[in-house]
Image (cartoon, rainbow, N blue to C red; front, side, top):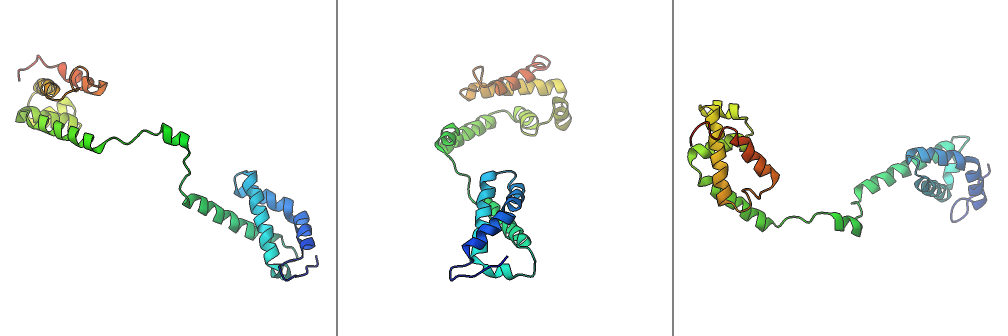
Length: 197
């Protein structure tokens, strides 16, 4: 293929011939690099041909065919395009913003945390120790009993009564509370009558 150089780049007739000879193979190659995204592959094909037009010296390379040069340029363009897409933040449209839950008011959360701390501090040391073992450290009743050196029934009883005190001190924590709170209360009520406070 005879390539002539103009002041702007490669002869346009040579580019038409280049696309006719190598375009289909290059597009197939780029489709593989873009995971079958035809629009991106076609954009990369056009950009590769623009690079060939900008660099007429590539036609004078050591290879008989331009295909290796085109594939190398196309692959590098695909890699650059992917990196630039990954570096950009994801665009968010109004539908996503409307369906995203609003962040909770930090002031309200802080106040609730302070209320819980105050209510837990008001418990007797024995009741507080049981709650710490079961609900904050995640131990089972038997494990808490072993750590505290008391019978399992006493752990259940203290847990039950501690939750009742918290229910009175914390609005919304008692019987009208979410299922997680009521399940904690019901889990500890099994042994509530087994021992006294």
